[in-house]
Each structure stands twice: as C-alpha cells, then as structure tokens.
Length: 377
Image: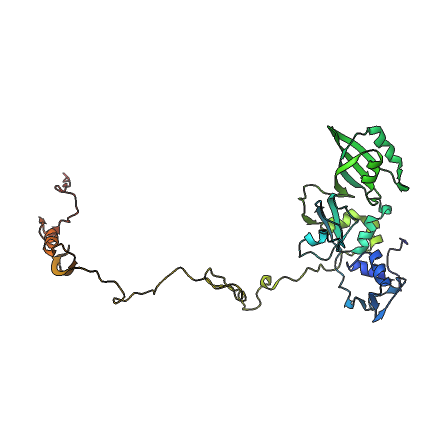
C-alpha cells in the first residue's frame, strides 16, 4: 500500500471507492475496470489510475454504485465442503449461498480451502478485507491440525526461521505438538502470511498428511463456541478497538455512516396509520395466497334445526297425563309397545305426606325410609 491515510483534494482511486462500497476487493475492481464494466460519468474507463470524488457518478454494469454504509465485520464458522467464492465454475457449493439472506453483500478476508473449516472473517468493506489479509498487517492465524504420520517437536521448532517448499518460501511458523493418538497427532499451527495451502504444503514437507484442518483464530478474533455454519456480527465499538488507529486509517474504515439493512418483506412491515394486520383464522386462508384453498369449519348442518327437520320416533303413540314435582298436570306422549298406564302409575301412585308439603317419590330412588334429622335439644 502507498501509506496514504486519507483522500487528497483530487479524491480517491476508483478501485478503492468500489471496494468501500462492498461490491468487490480492490484487485477484483481493477479486473472489472480492465474488462470495461466500470463507467464514470457515463464514460467507460480502462485504467484504474483514476481518482474520483463524491461528485462523480460511478456505475457498474450500468447500475449505480450502492450507497456506502457503515463498516461491518462478521465471524463465520465455515463447514467443510464449501468453497470460498461467490460463484464457482465447477458448480460446488459456496459459503455465500449458505449465508442468511438478510445480510449485506459480504467479502471474505482471505480464503479457506474446500476441506478446511473454522473461523472466516466476512466484511462489507473491500478495503478493510484487503488490509486485514495482507501479511504486513501482522495478524496471526492459528490452526488446529490433525495429521497422519510422525514428527518430533525439534523438527517443528525449525520452522520458526521459515521454510521453502517447491520453490515457494514461507515465513516464520509457530508449530507445537499437542498430543499423539496412535498413528495420528494433533498440532497447533500459527502463521502470519496465509499463502495458498500453506499449512498442508509445509506439513507434507515434514512427511505428514493433513486429515483435518480447523482455523481457530484470526488476529484478535476467536472461533470460540460459534456453532458450525453460524454467523455472528462484531459490534462496532469492539471492531474499532481491535483494529486500532493504524488499521482504521490504512483501510479507511467508516464507522460514522448509517447501517443499511435489506428491506423487510411486505408481511413483516409494520402497519401504517389505521391499517391492521390481517388475522389468519384456521378456517380462512390468508389474503393473497392464491394456491391455498380456504379451510372449512368442522360444523355440519344448519345451526338451528326446525321441528320439521327433526326425526319423529316410530311406533305406537299413546297420550296421558302425569303430575310433576310441584303438583302440576302435564300432558305426555308415549312411543312404543309398553302401555302408557304402567308408566303413569310409576310416577303418580306413590305419594307421601311430609308435613304440609306433598313430595313425590322418584321411581329411581333407593328404597327404604328417608333418614330423619336429629332434633336439637
């Protein structure tokens, strides 16, 4: 980097402005410029050696540059079997396809291999991503490694002065042998450069085959108890403190702009004015669900049955009179073969005199005299 901390009077390099908008890293933005995808004030540009200001109108593939928002950083627990890219030519699953849909467009800080898991930093600021992944930043990347083979701690200590593998020089490496389990062993590996497949290539030089590789930390940020596939945002205050004044100045991180979230779906929007949210009953389909048929209540038939709709019992009909418990005469109808006279006798015959009141004995009452109350002396 050139060491400039703020934009001069002529503005900033266009690749840096595009990176700040979160569309791509500075390197990717330069490739877009070479491909003729970037226009400034309606004119396509072919070189990134151009400074722009807030008065210039920048478009990418004909679309205006998004409004810059506050710099944000996310911790992501990358599972195995995902590629760190937005689009993979081979059709392999990508991490960005697995992220929650309500997140802004994010860029990864560096990469993790297809079969590497663990902590991956994501940000909406391309300039910050570029700053953090540079070896000059000096942030330590720590890994837990399970490997097949045998190695001594003395061999691992020799890596502190760096090593060359297949003509590629790797910087100082901190490696410790944690434990041995049969033919497998666990190591702690700490590097600062993060070159492509650096851990695997260095251990292969020592005769070890990596069977599992987990990044547990990147600079001051730890994987901790973050679940696999989960995303957690770093608070703005914590991010500013961990970056420090130097990295904030180098990356041009913006912590004063507003946070811009993706618009909520229509059904999640709060009601406006006197508008009320529709109540979805179990028997009524929500308005707008064209494919869903309305559910019906379990009630069958009309609410009030008329006397004509009721079924009249069949059989021989006889009419008679009985006396209710208050001494009133009531007309009754009897259906069936059993004579009505027997039924009437059952109700009318047994009458007892209890003082001044007449009380009729019910046929279903237990036999025997009614127990008397004890008189108070």
